[in-house]
Length: 148
Image (tube, rainbow, N blue to C red; front, side, top):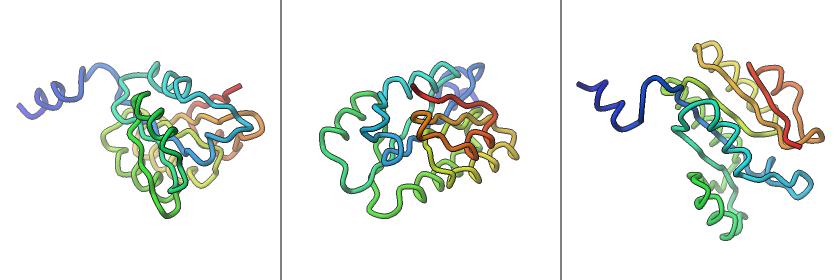
């Protein structure tokens, strides 16, 4: 009964559950010109997107927040370190995911990807551009892509 209820709420159990966690301050920079639709599409093509969160600091503009929400992201704003909140949330979600996707250029998320892999969860790293790519993050993930 619980399994059927879970499937009804979250979708088909045949499709992998994908979690997308975007490090806003490190990805949404002028020098990278990243489109959130592109980031979402990369994660979405790998399975059923069950979590799509964009993490921002308290300096985020209302326009950015509105645009992210319009693209289907849950926006998480923190007055503290965005990295800590994202890492804690991504780690907490691991048991409910088939694929953990992190969009960032920050090596701080390497332990999260490694932990997910040890738990049997596939990992995917999205870098905002060649200049913004973390080799450590890329090497920790099962798969990676660099946005152009």
